[in-house]
Length: 533
Image 1 (cartoon, one colour):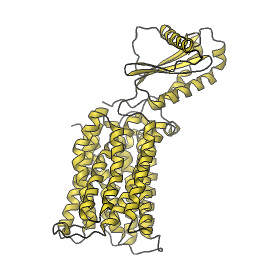
Image 2 (cartoon, one colour; image 1 turned 90 degrees about the vertical axis):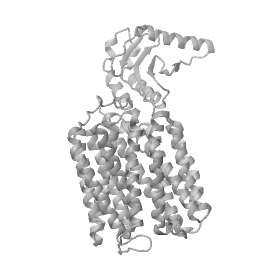
Image 3 (tube, helix red, strand yellow; image 1 turned 135 degrees about the horizontal axis):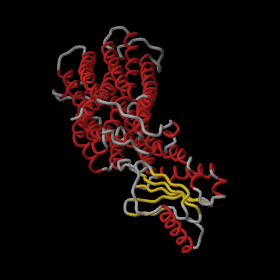
Image 4 (spheres, helix red, strand yellow; image 1 turned 180 degrees about the vertical axis):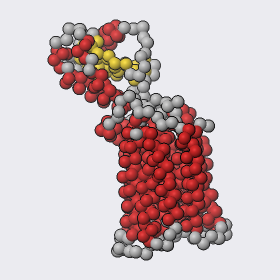
C-alpha cells in the first residue's frame, strides 16, 4: 500500500473519531459538568456548542482556501490541527469550567483543519476506481476504535469513563500523529490544474448546489434523529443483566458504530463496482427516517437497538457517497479544499440545526417527540431526494474532448481540444458540414426552423446550442445538464465578444484565437482532476 493511501486512511479515521465520538457521543456528558447557567433555555453548554461549530466552519472554509492556493501546506495544516486536537482532548479532562470551555473551542478550530485537510488528501491521492474502498477503510477503523472504547468503558469499573475516553482518543491521535510525521515526508503534494478555479465558478455549478442541498437536509435529519432517539432511550427500562452494564445511550451508539463497521467492510466495494451511488444514497436517506419510525413503534429495548442498527447501516453508505466520493469526483485538482470545505460545512450546519430542532420537539411534545419526528423526517427525506434528480451520477467521470463553433453556412470558425490532442481522420470542415447538413435535413423534414441540439452515438453525445448565425457543439461522454448550461454560457460570451467578426466573417480563423480564454474560464471548473499517479 502506498504511503499516500495510508496517510489518507489515517486522516479519515482520526477526523471522524474526533467528530463523532468526541463531539456527538461524549461532549454532552462533559458539558453537563459545567454548572454555569444563563437561563432556562440558554446555558453555557448551548453557547459552547454554538462557538465550537462556528469555529469549525470558519476554520474549515479558510483551510480549504489555503490548501487550494498552496497545496504544499497541506501536511503542515494537518499536523498542526491534529496536535491542537490532542492537546484539547487532554485539557477537556480539566476540573476548570473555563479550561473545558476553551478546550472545546480549540477542538472546533482543530476539527476545521482536520476535515479540510483529510478531504483534500482523499480527493488528491485516490483514484476513481478505489475511492469507495479507501474511504470505507478509514470508516472501518474509526468505527472499530469507537466500538472498543465505548464497550470497554461500559464493561469496566472506571469511574471517570468520559475523561478516560478523551485520553484514549488522544492516545490514538498521538500514535497517528507519529505515523503522519513519518509518512508525510514520503508523499508529494499535488500540483494545481492548468486553469485556476475561482470560487464563483464552484458555487455557480448546479450539480454542486443540488448535492449541497441534499447533504444539508440529510444531516439535518441525522441531527434530529440523534437527539430524539437519544432522549427516547433515557425513558426505556432494561431488565437484561448483560445490557444493564451499559448506559442506554452508549449502547445505542455502540450498535450504531458496530453496524457502521460491518457494512463499511463491503460498502466501498459496492460503490466502486456497481456505481449506483444515487440509488444507494436515496435508500440510505430513507434508512435514517425509518430508524426514527422503528424507535417510536414501541418503547422497548429491542426496537431501540433495531433503530440503531438501521442508522449504522445507513451511515456506512452515506460515508462513501455524499460524504466523500461525490465531492472528489466533482472537483478539479485545484479546488479540492474548497469543495470538501463546502461539503463539511453543510454537514456541521445540518447536524447543529437538526439537533436544535430535536430539542424543540422534546421540549414541546416529550412523550410523542419521536413519533412526530418520524413523520417529519419522512417528508424531509423526500425533499432531500428531490435535488438528486437534477444531477448526473458523478461515478462516471465527465469527459469532453472537442468544442466546435460553426457558422450558418456550415464552416467551422473556432475549435478547441480539451486535454491532449485527439487524432481523427475527419477534417473539422467536414465534421462541421456534416452536423450542419443533419440539422438542415431535420429542419426541412419536420417543417420548422429549429436546430439540432443532440446527437448520440453509443455512449457518446454531441450537444449543441445555436444562435441566429452560429452554433456551438461539444463532444461529451454523458448527458450532463451542467455541460449544456456551460455551452449556452460559452456561446453567449463568444457572440458578445465577436459580434462584429461573426457578422462580417469571410473565413479568417485568426479573429477568434483569444476565445481560448473564454473556454478555459467557462469549462475549466468542469474538468475533473487527473489522477496524480
